[in-house]
Length: 231
Image (cartoon, rainbow, N blue to C red; front, side, top):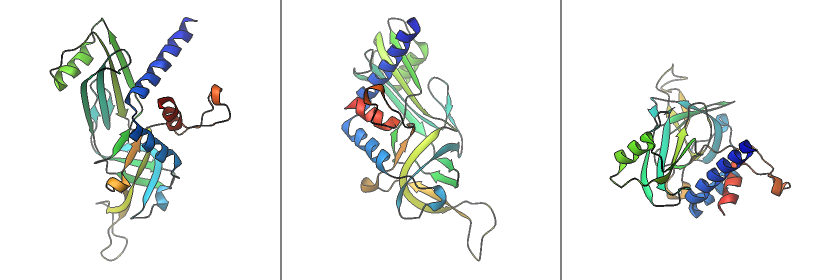
């Protein structure tokens, strides 16, 4: 019974965090992500906006999150309050370009200016007792006083994790290998941000279909469930 209550509390906390941080604009991005059909990487055409899905692969170096997890990029946020609905205490984010692999090929994701919809990978709730790592993170990012009650959320882009990306397809030289023909260098698909009207989205939300007990006739992926909870 105790284990059940712990599980309920954790689920409630996660939903609370997502309710707190998902604004209307982000829910609109989630809806767009869900509704856009997936294009296989080998079928990507330069000049079009497409959505690809696959596994993340590191392109260059990796980073360490404030809690020490190795990743390709991350966003870390600390807010006052048990559920993180209080004032912002500190925020940090960093990331690098990466590769996406599906069963048809590999594409480069140039993440500059992308909108990130990242599923939380670490949660820490601080109440009365101190948390040295979280306190160090806040102190490094700001000079705000650290309250006794706060919520720390870390969202990492992990090597090997599943990702969905909407972006404008381009072609770029791989920089290696022999030319395919006269003056023709090997190329690969790359996704970039297309500007305000063709905004890039990078999401680590699961696409697996679920059937919540209260909505048995309404199958939803993780992004749809998140948007429903946030409404």
